[in-house]
Amino acid sequence: MARIFSGIQPSGELHIGNYLGAVKNWVALQHTAESIFCIVDYHAIIGAYEPDQLRARRREMALGLLAAGIDPDVASLFVQSDVPEHTELAWIFNTVTPLGELERQTQFKDKSQRMESVNAGLLNYPILQAADIMLYRADQVPVGEDQIQHLELARVIARRWNAQFAGEQEFFPEPKPLLTPTRRIMGLDGQSKMSKSMGNTIGMMESRDEIWAKLRPAVTDPKRIKKTDPGTPEVCNIYHLHRAFSPPPTVEHVAVQCSTAGWGCIDCKKVLLESMETELVPIRTRAEELRAQPDRLDAALASGAEKCRGIARETMRGVRDRMGFG
Ligand code: ATP
Ligand code: MG
Image (cartoon, rainbow, N blue to C red; front, side, top):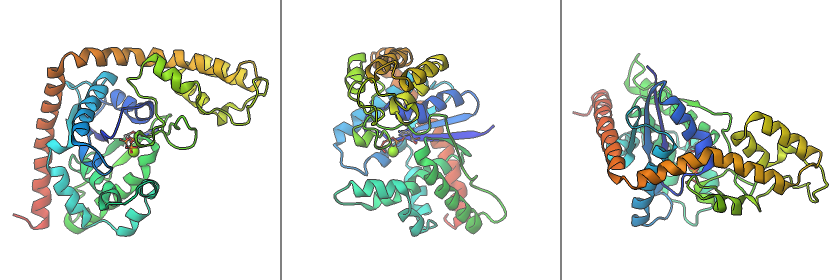
């Protein structure tokens, strides 16, 4: 059976970009492969943060993932810092990772531009990510499009380590991305990828009113200035959100109404809001139920960590042995 692994940072609220690019796929895939999902809190400390805030966000993320449909009886959900082998393997991978490859990573270039002072953790982020995946010797990684480049680097790391220490064997499988049709959701600014760190998100737990307050002013086709100007659906972020949330006949109808100026953008956004509510209300309801049962959340994370510690220890035994430790 294939083993899939993926992670999400507790660096802010779970948003619809995370959901459509990754988490929705996790929920679908958990029944088809042995699945391990990780709240990667060591990744999330690269940017400035408050310790209490991290504690709260970690729990909130776990709650959001369970509410979105991760089933702890089927998949393992755990917190990265509960399995110390992640950082151990990351250190080892530091020693086989070419510096030039790290400096070329788009996420490093983008995020370092937005930081006042850049720490080595930001540069080395993909090494820890490679360790996260490889600790479980996972071969498939369901992620959004922005992570494809990091996975290419993870494959370079696997190849280099295997070549140096595994002889003819493939100790670490080369992990491949699994993408969704909604692999890159743009932020409400229409300028960049929706990201927790950019403040351009719609949160999975936001209320109908909060979502509407964000959708109403959201950027649409910039050439559609007056309601009577026909629009080009393909260039409009709202149209792409319809493709993610609305049933196909609605999507077709939206495209016609936009390109013939039958609807104004507000009409189009109102229909989108209804489609979003259809998908998100059950998730919010489950989240409320879970919030009232904190023991269920603790139990899910504890059993996930227990299982993952077992796998991680075994992998590290193999790694240490092949590298001349112990
Ligand atoms: P941060 O801004 O802190 O990096 P993020 O919103 O990018 O947060 P991550 O925790 O880095 O979220 O990513 C979690 C998963 O969500 C990854 O698989 C990533 O590819 C996916 N993802 C993130 N943003 C988007 C997006 N806008 N569209 C599709 N997938 C996304
Ligand atoms: Mg990110």
